[in-house]
Image (cartoon, rainbow, N blue to C red; front, side):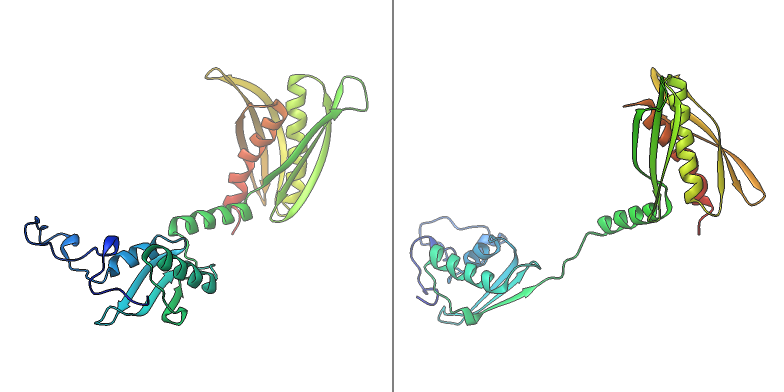
Length: 255
């Protein structure tokens, strides 16, 4: 069978006018449009296949399928799509279609504008911001002391610094902040920064790392402050507090 029967029987017949004695459909509904060859059913079947966006089946006046036009997503193999179409039409409608009558068009991979804007903003942020790469805390060389190692990156360059501090809550925060400032001072070749102080503060039933940093750019000196909530360990929050203070300052001075 290579075409739709002019008087199909069974489920293929989806568009014949109602027989005498049967209630008719409203003239404005889509189902009231005659479809004597079952073309719409074939098109609906094809658009249900994976990767097919739209389908158009063209028949001759005798119901023979002359053309099948498919719009598919990018990235799918046209030969596999043709095989899927042939199998679906044969299995569901008993319709055998020559593969030469099936034409495949594929869309380019188009991303939503929201995704493009989001990725653009993220890319520019990554290019301009100082990024946290890692931190470790280990026992120091002397008793009751710890070694804090901080790694940051900026525009593809990565630096690491280590600071040894007393094993007390305040000293641990100060040590992490000092290591962070040392790394940033190495990464920002056009500017210089120095740590003014770091401490733990309480607000809203939570603890925060609070830091103050001096930013030196040309003849200008700015006092920069930053905070970060302590969620894991205080040392990590101190690093993010330094980044909070310095990123806004460095971004304002970058082209």
